[in-house]
Length: 470
Ligand code: NAP
Image (cartoon, rainbow, N blue to C red; front, side, top):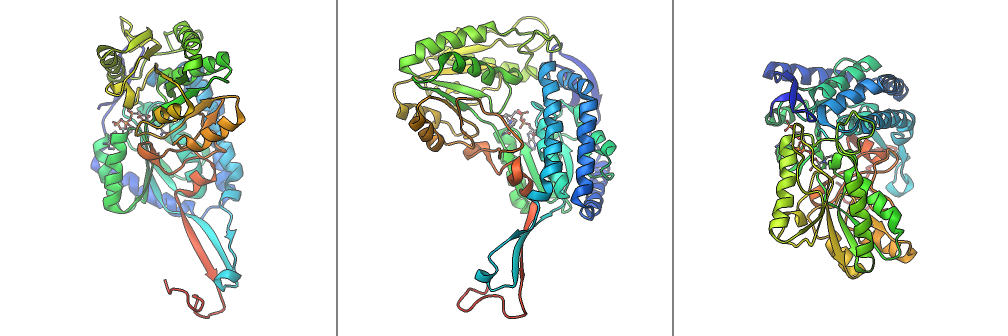
């Protein structure tokens, strides 16, 4: 894939970049390694001041940064501005909380025959971040803010269609005061990931992206014995039970499916509705989806902009056609817009069956699958019936049912009477083919820490009588 900015609203290539040479990649890794040695000698308070400066810069440049993101990948300008604000908030969150998250944790010294025993969280070195284009600032920030605060350095291989946002991020951390090399953008294609991750100076990798990319990086990391965090795709269920507030559920369902032009890993993609309220929900949902305005993402009246790439638009249409050819019914949408740009209308497809691609695959655009079920158990069976396990949503006013959904949905998170969202305060990640490891909260910060056990005694053998000496 060329490293270039192509405006998805027009199809025009605006700016192209030559990929970095082998020598340039090697030099960048060297700078990241050097910066790591510098950074681990700084205090949390100092790193916090730099990260707070990054938040201030983000806020000051919000509109310009948002315009760039909209131009590179087509999200609405309003959504892009909100993304910048969220990134600034995450920087402030980690600047404020790092001392607490990285504090030594005392252990029961008596139980391990020590005078003192504790866990210390320390940085591990340069971390490679392979990131997607869909939230081009946020996906990077939720790795970078905790990683830099912990004293690690970052090497960013961003998606090839958002090079200007990638360079803006490098510039942001430099301007905020972090040492040269603390955060570096590598303008490289995915074929170079093996070289970078194999370099002994690079200690770990985090990837947000597709299942295929996850498998590839996990293989390289397995060979090189390096830690990875993988945030992969999802086909999140949105279950609606008879006691739900149907108006509210249909409204939130529309946002949950079409936010970010339908291109979110945690977008609700499969709407699983109890037969008692199926017709009433379907009518409301299809009406809401049809009412969304598709168009120029810079226009404040637009709800849904273009898909980020022509290939992405063609792929979701192929998934819809496959379902229709095998007997599914389209309640609204279903045909790409004519003319320039990669627009696709909000679409609802029902009468889905397991042999259709939409049943088991992720649909990365504003297309909803609508399923009728006749019981709680059938709802759970359909909801858990894909290989994914990222987010999940359940709508019910019955407290007992809320508890059951919290336990029974096989996913990294369950949102009851709401839609899946990420917050710096809460851990984020998936199970099964949606990946492993967690981002955000204290857990996300500690993923790339050496969780070091420290035991201090009086000079006797450390293992107690009868304990294994290992
Ligand atoms: P993608 O093709 O996997 O691309 C993501 C990143 O991985 C890009 O930087 C890409 O580089 C790189 N890449 C692709 N193939 C690779 C390989 N074989 N080895 C190493 N790197 C590789 O994903 P996408 O289609 O652009 O993004 C959408 C996917 O990301 C969806 O499945 C979505 O659900 C998932 N996602 C997950 C989360 C989460 O938090 N779980 C969040 C957002 C998105 P190039 O651009 O150069 O190809």
